[in-house]
Structures are given as structure tokens and as C-alpha cells.
Length: 511
Image 1: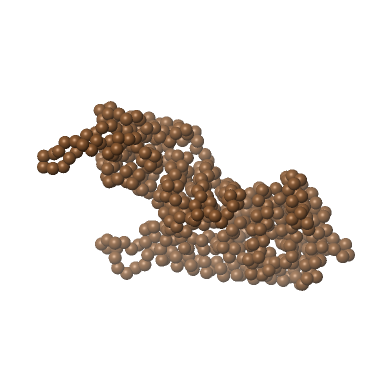
Image 2: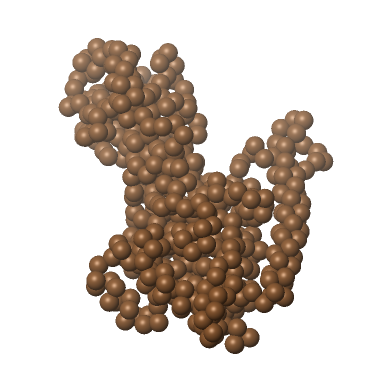
């Protein structure tokens, strides 16, 4: 049996079972920061004369209890007049949290009840909280940054290398979104758990790690269902998001133009709509008590309908945006100006290349999705036949990423049409990235899934100044027609211009 007592000595909760089985749900605990304890201590009884196990101590840490007292009973005692029996107390244990990185908790050796009774709990708690306060101030980071715990699940559909590459990419995404990754955890399972993605024991471990590090956000490396998010948040008491939500957040920060903001809002609403049910009873005006029954609709239904109306309006605006861009492309085609679109994985160097070739002054940074809005500039290159100057149009497009969320593909269809309507593509590849081959496959997969088949593509290997000779040889063997450049160092640009003119000549001849 477990009794939970506040600092006034009042029993606030009694449960039958172990500290792990009777623990208070995180959402019902007082909302204190990492420098405070919860103000609750647990007194538990057990029949076996042994120290509290790992599960009991973990439950103490997750609830940030002031202390856990475990009383071992002998099971043999004296009979009461009128029936009933009670056992003698054989030994007791006292456990509490400690603010040291080497250990999470302190556990006393077995002691007698008399020694335990002389312990001043309030003095112990005051001393602990003073230490926690000092430790917390020492490790506190910029409050504008989320403190993030990454969680990855290894299943049979990916190789260990692909999994590690995906986790590293997720860490880059979190960093780009403005978060700070404090820890990465992973679990191997044949398939995701339908309720919590990872197993029950791992959920407890995640909650304990998050509590210990002062994490305020948990990010999973895969898409989560609304029920999984809800279950994980209830069990950890910390906000949980998936990979898609991180990408959407980056897009929301990056969108500068009206068109970009429009498409981001559409993607966010389409992502949010099926997840409204996970927001709990706050979304309902109907209850189960006096005065709450009768006709009426839930706030959930009202909100859902409002979002559906907004989505319909945004989709109309995206359609208008498509029509506007289509007219611009038609006017270019009437003037017989060939068009090339820069495509590639995010952070491959497309915007840098556009700036170098056309002086476009597009924002560039060593970040994922640094540019979101398509930028079109004119460029003069030599004609492949006559060698005379020829005008073409070069368009920088949004970067691709492995398993691009469907809601983003749909929302950014106006932008992606720049790819399908171009005469030819320049596929920019970051050769310095360890996973450049899988990035090429990801881009090819996205291009193959487009409704209109894009034109011919020329592969450009960028950042050759950052790679070794073996990587260059491997890339040349796999892609003998490719061009090797370094946009930032302006290497190979003259060869690129000649190959672009050949590509334009070939693409126009095919039409």
C-alpha cells in the first residue's frame, strides 16, 4: 500500500500496489520547474525485506517526490481483539532525489523505525531544493530555446546506417527550428507499439531522462497518430511532437512572401485537423452532470468546421496562386525563354548556386530549408550551337527531404509546379554529406511521384572542396555525365554554363 502525503502532513492519495503502480499521473502533479520538488512524499509498505527496486525509484524520480519511504513488514504480528492482524515493522528505507549528474537518487541502508522517525523531512527537503536551485541556475539555457529529447525507433525496414542518418537529420531539423538537443534515445522493435510507439519500459525511461535533464519537448523520428501523442504526453507530462511538426515549424519561420505564408498555413491546418481530438475535454462543452446535458454541439465540432472552412478558402487562394504562376510561365514561353529549375535535397547549395550565377541575393545559410519561396532570375549562357549569348530563366525551388510529409507536398503544389513546368532540371547534390546517395534516391522518388513528369535533369555535385578523392571517384563512376562544382568557391562554373547550354538545347529539341 502507498500513502501520498503533502508537506502539511495531509494524506492526499492512497493506492493499493507498488509505488510504480500507484504513481500520480504527471498531469495531476503540481507544475514546478526542474529546481523544485513536487511537495509530496510517498510512504509505501512491502512484505519482502529488501530495498526498493529500480521501478519504485524511477516512479519517485518521475513524480519528483520529496522522499520515498519504504517500510518492510514481517507479515507476522499480533491478532487484534475482534479480528484482523498487523505485522511488525522489520526495517525501513529512505530514498530521495539528488541534484548531481552522476546519480539520480540517494538510497539509505536499512534503518530502524526510530531512526526514521527522528528524520526532519522539511529540513531535508529545504536543503535539497536549495541544491537543485544552484544546479538549475548553472545549467539553465536561453529560454527561447526548447530543451529537446530525441527518440528514434529502429524497425526492420531500415538499415542501421539509414536509421542513424535519419536521427542526425532530425537533430539538424530541431537545431534549425531553434531547439537544443540534450539527449538521444533509441529502441529496437519489430514494429511500432500501436499506443506509444516504443515499449512501456522505454516510455518510463524517456520520462525519467526528460525529468532529469529538464527537457520540455520530446521529438520522435517518425509520424505519430493523435492517440500516440496523447498517450505519450499523459505518461510523460511533457509535450510530444513528431518529425512532420518540426518541419512545419521550420516552414512557418522561413515563409517570407504572402504565397509562402499561405502555403504553410494550409499545410499546418491539414496536419492539425485530424489531431483536434487529442486536445482532451477542453475542446468539449458537453459534460455528464446537472446543467450540462441537452442539445448543443461540442467545441471540437465547432473548431473542426471552422478549420475546414479556412482550409477550403486557402485551397482556393493556392489555386489562384497556381493560375498566376502559370500566366507568368506562359508569358516566358511566348518570349521563347527556356527555363531551368534547381532541385535537390535541402541544404545542398541551390540558393548559393543561384546567387553565384545571377547575383540574386537570396538568403543562404548552413541550415535545412533556409529558403522556402521560389526565386526566378534571368541568366545569360552561350548558345550550344551558335555560341552566341542566350537568355534563360533559372528558378530556385524549395528543398526536398526524405519522406517529405504529404500535407507539405499538397500545400506546396504551386511551388512544385515550377519543377514540373521547367524545360529541364539541375539536380544539385551535396557531395560532402555522408548520405549523398540516399539523398539522390529521395529526390528521385519525390520527382517520380509528381503528377506531371519533369523534364531531363543534369546532376550537379556541389561542395567538392569539402570531399576526399575516393568520394569524387565513386561519384564519377556512378554518374559519369555529372558536373562537379563548388558554388561557394566558384569552382567549375564555366563547365557548368557549357553543360547548361547543352541541356537547354536538348530539352527544347525534345519538345
